[in-house]
Length: 216
Image (cartoon, rainbow, N blue to C red; front, side):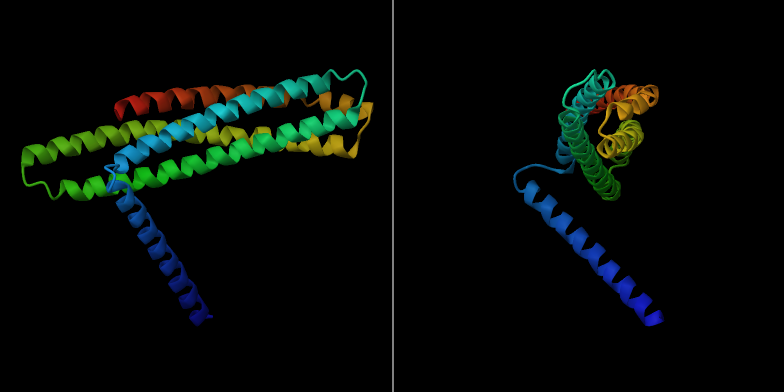
């Protein structure tokens, strides 16, 4: 058992070392073109903002589809289900993109601040060293505000996707008018959650725009 634990720890350590080496190579390649971690962080924040905008639009479209479903008065219910399922799948795809972008932002930000902190110690001038430390503190504080907004928006997607998934599956199992009637009872909850999600997304997008301006 101890041997297995040691082996597991060794594998994890090797994986982390390789991951760090890969990131170092990645940053080194960008630096050859004059693109540094600060530039990459700005780029990742822009991408995260754009993905949030795309996700917001998709969730708006999904809400419209749900409202159409709740007002269903007859017709091809299977076609309606297929359209709703497609909206759900696209919503999951957009949400996954947001999750991925936020992780990228977190990684680059962490690496940038670690590097910045270490390099401050290499500055011999007390005045310049303190000035750089002040700028690091200010940038980190602004990033913390952005990160908090990003996480709130990210977390607000989960309740919506859960309810959306429930409704898609329920409709799949009950392709009849009675199923629509049952889903209407869930209308208020999911609409409120989508409205909350869109508010969080808009706040996060605004925070990202503000952070991007400070990185000019």
